[in-house]
Length: 139
Image 1 (cartoon, rainbow, N blue to C red):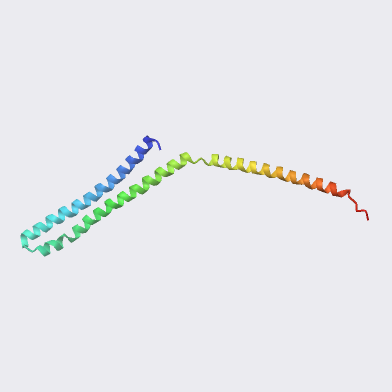
Image 2 (cartoon, rainbow, N blue to C red):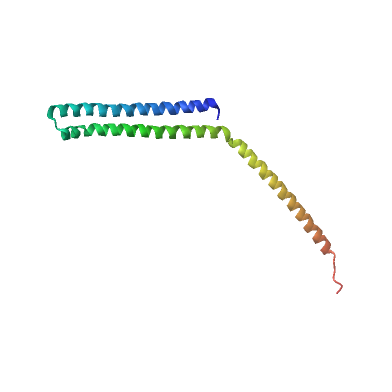
């Protein structure tokens, strides 16, 4: 693969992963930021750490969702860019018309060889038939 095309696919991978990473980091930031602030304020007002931890639950789920979005984005970007690059490379290197012409040429050669063999066998059969045609038994 040319370095220019490799760079283009690398840039595409980077942009996809960066977009998913930004969304994931935003979700984690919102979850932990608001959750942490809410838990801190609740703890400051009531002094109850258990109630503060319970209040953080939905925000922690949002943070975990952000991590999942980031990881999914990495896998998605890898799949999209890897399969796209492989398809592009195979399209360039695998010429179906060239393969077809190679197969036809090989078949033509094989058929010509078979035709020569058949002609040789036919000649031998004719010669064998003509030799035995005039032989008579003395009886």
